[in-house]
Image (cartoon, rainbow over all chains, first blue to last red; front, side, top):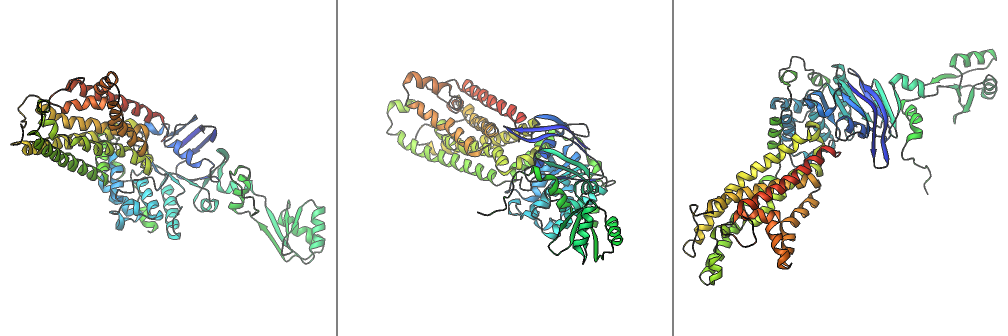
Length: 304
Length: 280
């Protein structure tokens, strides 16, 4: 269980993390979501005691990370797969980490097997591809067989097979009752792995909710209606208080009225419907909707 | 990689996993740092360079000095210190030792390894003390070996051409043993400066200035300035432990070495305190 309360981090004049309070619960995959520069990595660094908070606290089972008696057994973290000495062989990298927490050597071979790096364990970590480095970082996180796992953008640089592997791993870790916190800037990725979402933007909390709830609350539902008598239907819908937008293919996009009500309205007025489809906003749209005001860098759209 | 393999992770009942977990100790960190230092190439490389420079250069200087002895004037003969001559290669070898000490810390910062290390060992003081302790111990062993080998090789070259030294003569054993102690103190200084400055280039320039540039500049100063600088400059004072005969305006061997150790301890204490407070 990770608990943050009023967590704040200021670098010079920049507020990277602004009064975040949340808890990350066991047995669930919690997606930590936000646009680039939202403060996700800073928050993870604060949890791990790498940076000291300017205000507030964050604890692992009521203790601050620096006071944990067996840190790698409590928390396994993959922050940056390149945070290692490239001249050291992968096996030795894992060995020195294992030794620092009194973890037996046999466990090193075990995690190498789990991430599938047996063939390259005796190669220097600096020669690893991004995907292999990511697997090595995950192996390091698993070394202590920890109850809490934190992964920062774990699928970055992985090939499709690797992405599926990471998703499966993350799901199964949570299924074993572990606490799993996964950061990402990709809503679509979180849709496939997360149960719960913590969404931040510009260091501030935007949402702390289940994935389903998140979509329901942050997206406007619309109904796509295709009718040969679109102009008449549009007039009736407008009179009934719905907002109507005409799509490029001539379909009407109706908001503010359920599909059942639209069907009844059409029937009552003798209008033919070819299509009546409730549209559910994708997670990506919901996410962009929610974080629109807190994105650090906007593309202007125009190329000059 | 199948889901089934991933499922194998589930730990309960796995002897190699949950059941063997215990509190991480300082001894664990020491073992880890021992592995770290011997699993990068820079360590054997730098120590080899130190050995070749130390012994090789010492031998060359011994040969040149002993050939010159026949034509030396009285003043030179009075100052003749065969022990110091045989150990003179260490003046260059020390650079490899101190730079490796710096790199032991700064390479963690330049590669990003420090974040992984501090996540594994969040008690930062433990990490620095283990790192510094391991490196100092390694340098002490290597330095003592270098001191004795340099001395024996140098005396073998000098003997027959000029008066040589034996370990039984007053102050000689102290100077040879002192060579290893001096190198160990310098190694620890390297670790401390590395932890303080965190960047290889900045730390190496600082140590080179400390060891060579500033004492060199002092030579150009008037005597009233030069003498106290030569006497009390920490690394100059420390190197007195390598001298059998003592020049004017120098501290006694152990007093000089003590001053150097005090200086190293202060730098280390500052680095230690800053490590606790700074963001990694």
